[in-house]
Image (cartoon, rainbow, N blue to C red; front, top):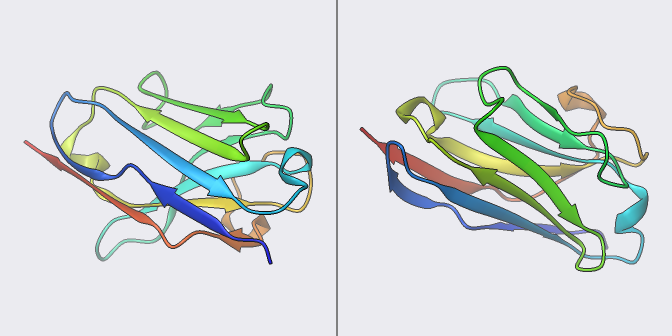
Length: 124
C-alpha cells in the first residue's frame, strides 16, 4: 500500500529555515512526480512546489519562489522541501502528494496519494 509520511515541521522564527521530508513506501517512487501543498486555517489547500520523477523539472508557486527548494532522493524514496527566509504567511499544514505519472503539475486534483501533513508555524 502506498504511503507518504511527512516530517520536519515545527515552530520557527520569521527569517528562519526548516526542511520538510516526505518518505514514500513502495518500489516505484522513481516513476512518479511529487508535490508539496499547504493549507492554512480557513483557507483552501494551495500549491507550493512540484518535481518530476527524475528531479529535473521543479516548479514553484510565486509566493515561495527563491525561498523554497524542492528536491528528491530516489534511492531513499524521499522528497524534500527546503524552506528558507520563512514568513508568518508560510504558516500552514504542509502536505506531500504523489502522482501516478512522471510529469509534475500544480493541479491539486491531479495527485492521487497524500500524506497526513506536518504543521509549520512561523512566528513574527
